[in-house]
Amino acid sequence: MRPGARPSAGCIDRPLAPYSGEPLPEAAVSDTTPVIEIRDLHKAYGALEVLKGVDLTAPRGHVVSLIGSSGSGKSTLLRCANLLEDSQEGDILFEGEAVRWKGTGHGRHPADRKQVTRIRTNLSMVFQQFNLWSHLTVLQNVTEAPITVLGRPRDEAEAAGRDYLAKVGIGDKCDAYPAQLSGGQQQRAAIARALCMEPRALLFDEPTSALDPELEQEVVRVIQALAEEGRTMVIVTHDMRLAGDVSDHVIFLHQGRIEEEGAPDALFGSPSSERLRGFLSAVS
Image (cartoon, rainbow, N blue to C red; front, top):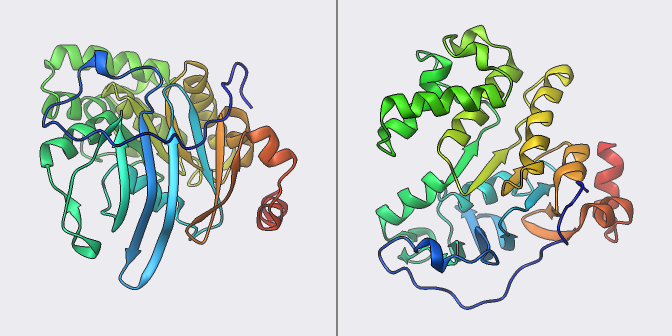
């Protein structure tokens, strides 16, 4: 558990706030309102049910890690949280504001595209395979979304982009292209790109799994530093050391359900589930 971490956060039971058509004012979002809250989420691909009633709460300034075997639903849950995937049932809230839906079951989709865009711009995602544009420089990759999506002046976006690239340790790579970077440097550029959107939360989908062990530590150090800053993060990871070091709360998923969750010290030190004990033994 990271130094200074808050107590583990479970699911918070509060009534849904209807979407008003406009962003919630800053004053309406209290420090106790979770940035992300998911309740009883169900997701299926055809007849295959991938998520079977999953809950997740990411309070402001907390780090939540999702662990589990391949196919347990971790990445799908993360993509549903960012509305990159539609879900068939359940509630998704961003800072206390419920996503509005139209249709039911496999026909269910978000009802308000402006709401979707606003939520996505506030939940920056870092992907396993970096997803950098090969034809743009590192600085252009980092500043493209703030300029085109947020409408920031180019000089302002570039100044912020340079700052964030320096923050992740590649300030000297602004004019390089992705192909000229190592995997660890590319992932750090992807993190800088996410930070440049000034999001309310960062979502990491296996940020180190595509990296060699020596490059993996470059990215781990950046994530650890972000956790120490009090960034709100949800991390899908196969790295149990990372999950244990940076998390306030860890969720173990098995076949689309939460098998066990809690503070990392308890979850890793004294797991109560036989499946979790077997999983930890297999990955250790």
